[in-house]
Length: 221
Length: 221
Image (cartoon, rainbow over all chains, first blue to last red; front, side):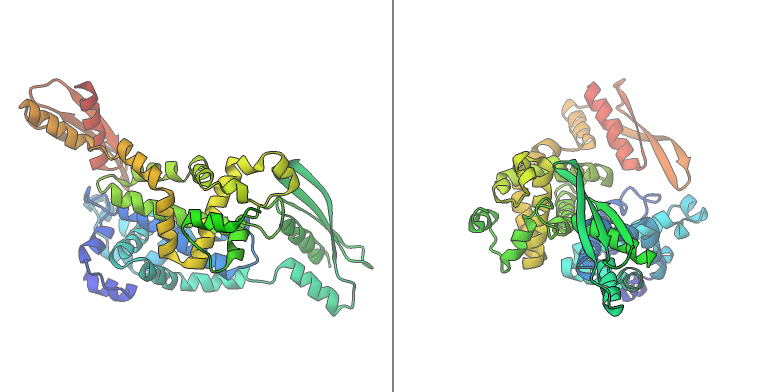
């Protein structure tokens, strides 16, 4: 295995117990004492830290879109990219067959190892340190995400548009509610007086239905 | 709404920002500013804290069974029970229709509210406090679990059995490996010399295959 000091420099963290880091890099193809348990732990921690980040970064986005944003960030391909950035493949302990068949570059193995390394940092250094390292690992992805997703929401955009054009402000009306009493679906219409543009949106959440309606009016303007 | 001080006593936590607790108790049937975002956050935190607990409590259990144990602990019914213990239904802010149709006792609403309250504690008090409260909320479930699951693993049990009976120790042999090179499945047989009891186990992990094989011999003894 390559010198673990380099990896620790790359991670920005020096382990008290280097055996934990070794375990995190040990694939099941080489030992029954491998990184799968640490992967289980790291997976849950990454999920949480990424959830908190998107929760704070997008204070106006509702739970459904937040879940989708998080899912994109923690999916196998995303985690594997973090592993590639860390050159984690060079440090992995793999069985001979796995090694020959290209295991060092396999996305699933890299993604699992990233989770396991994070799990090992959590055990070794605690929550705050592990959280900081996850945020650093994800910093490029978080920046890219903000450009795609942190756009103003549709209701804000349409309000600014109408003000700029000297039009009346958009009106949102609840047309109907359908579905079960405990899981209602709101049907909302958005219109601008003096314009024949109308948008309709439906969602389990009235606010989200209004956003959809506004986005349809926007796209028609 | 019932006096939130009682709930805070029950939780063992007093909020700096009581509005966060109110938000955590606000169902979407009454306001578009509701507890769904806090639920998203609390869900991920509960997942992680429970993952860490089972990781530490069962140091010999592999990732597959750990995931199943966690899934049982964080499923809707389990979370709803925590909500019932906290009498959370009495504090919920619900729309009239939801209230009339029994929303205060609905499992999905109670489970979501537990997650949201935990998310609110995390925002208000930080990780360590939220973690402690989750562990307290789950303490009865964790104790019950330990009786069911913290049993000695099958390999240990069978070893103790053979020693007690003066038999030879069990032998584990790898009979074959199937599946893809990067996702092998191990087929293991467990036998005891001087006994005709044989057990076969298959798993992606050799250790787990041995446990399965051992458990089959045990159940036949």
